[in-house]
Amino acid sequence: MPDAEAIATVVVDTVKRALAPVVARLDAIEVTTRDAMTLRERIAVLETRAPVPGPAGPAGKDGSNGADGFGFDDLSVEFDGQRTLALRFERAGVVKTFPLALPFPRYQGTYQEGVAYVIGDVVTAGGAAWHCQRPTTLKPGDSVDAWRLMVRKGRDGRDAIATVHR
Image (cartoon, rainbow, N blue to C red; front, side, top):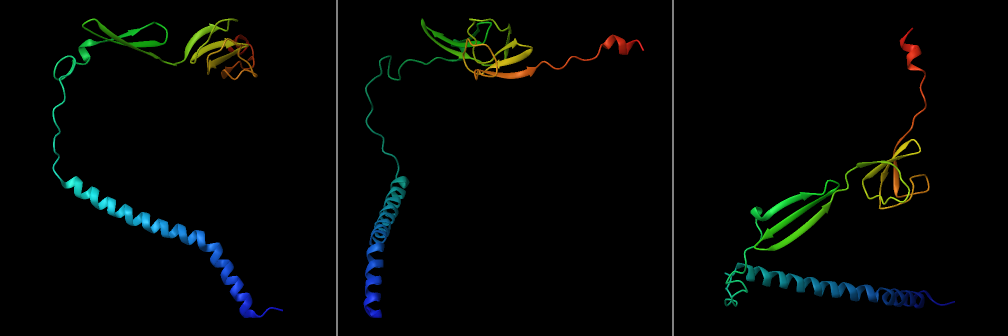
């Protein structure tokens, strides 16, 4: 049977080998931390100095400061009567248009087979109202994830005329 001192030596050596990568990583972190502190000090010194302007660049294509950009007077907004707003900028014959499709709910009537529906369309089908979640031509129903049920038809009520004339 080995003696206690031999066992202690083996345990100590095993623990030192197991911890060696951890000790090496801690040493690296300490070096990195010292480097970061030195870098922060150098940046702080640079930030206190007055800026030194560089040499002037060459004149721009349309003059020293370049062409003027579009302004509010050059803007018009167009609506297609459906869902799209178009921001239209025009100046000196140059036109830039930015269409914005707005996915607000828009009733499209009863579902019609073959019609392409887009996000925001609302249709009725099977006694229910459905909201389009992604572009589709499929009919709304339980197995179609492009549609979300909004309102389902309720049960028929009693004859209202009979209760009013009592």
